[in-house]
Length: 142
Image 1 (cartoon, rainbow, N blue to C red):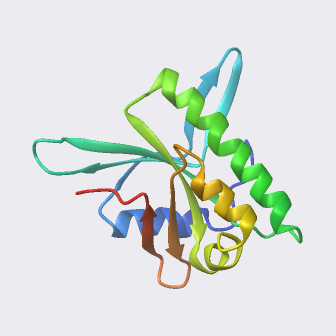
Image 2: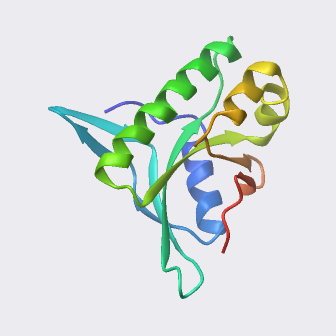
């Protein structure tokens, strides 16, 4: 089993504080004969007419010396997992979970802006100290 990202439990707590129920830790996807592990699966009851919203959260801590290498890996994982979910659980949306300070640094640079402009890309940022969600991109409507 792959090691959990440094911020895994922080993100889990932040989602719970934001009203999400963690349903899978990790969320296992199957592709061919292989298992893929997305960090978290969660659900949240939205407005009565919409029912539950389901997400998959891929936590990225960006702790290696090269932020650009971490961004490349996160980008690949996000879109790989997204394609698998489109086939296996199309009602579940994947989000990349990124600490707010990293977002402020990396996603204000050209490389991060490229990813933010990519159609279908979604992320949420969190405050590691407060263990709270800061923002959703795009916004989840309750």
